[in-house]
Amino acid sequence: MIVAIGSDHGGFELKEKLVKYLEENGHQCVNVGCYSSDSVNYAPIAEKVSRKVVSGECETGILVCGTGI
Image (cartoon, rainbow, N blue to C red; front, top):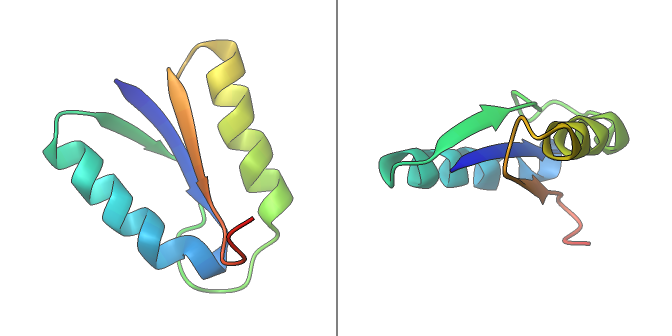
């Protein structure tokens, strides 16, 4: 399965763990950000994940934010 995955800075560490887990279990991840724990705007990353799923490039998407919403 091809998974689009993204997070804000608060969810960065969990996203990295999820990418590792998914890849170890045979899935391909398309990481659209963020790429560190530096503060970022979540909305553009959520849009990137959504567009990858809607376009069919990725079969599903995962978004992780620090608030848990």
